Image (tube, rainbow, N blue to C red; front, top):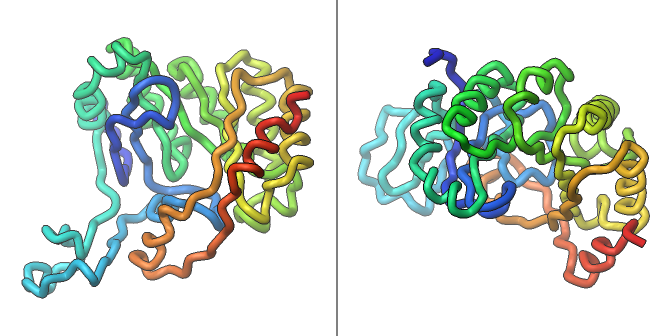
Length: 267
């Protein structure tokens, strides 16, 4: 087994939101976008970080003099650990029975997993040898060569499309969307299985006009298997404080808005 390593910040088992069936989601550390609503800010930096939760500190002194220390009470949490392909595979294999019975599998996410494409290719290949369904969750802001590496071993792409206006996209994510949309079009042309996922952010892209325009673009590109609208939530806001960063608050789209957006572009 190859000795390639990748930095991972979380491995979540029994997920039902990152593709079909019951899945294990592997979160790669490091992202080349900086979405202002990101609910996994600990996945943005490629470096190991410490999340601090002072309210959980009991003053036991165990961490004295140790910056990189996983507190048993959760007051300090080390974020980011290097794994080999075999180590990730062993974690994934723990729930193979659930994948087989539910039509699930493994999803590689982030951060941006495609930034570590050589490792991603090898772990995808390893999973396919065991008959495990594979999904890659990506924002698509990488050279297309990265997609060419992983495409033969990827059963499904979960592809984020956030905004169509390039300047607005840059304002909210730190980069324009030209490469993202180009890569999506090329994947569609190659016949890749794709679910487009649109994070719906209050005050940013939560309009019928925006969602209709995205759906029309997808149709013009040749269509994708599925479009998912994912309403913004604030569940990751506490992590910004734990990282010593400022959090930006966005409004959560209500059920009426989400229902209208679900209909947008379908008529």
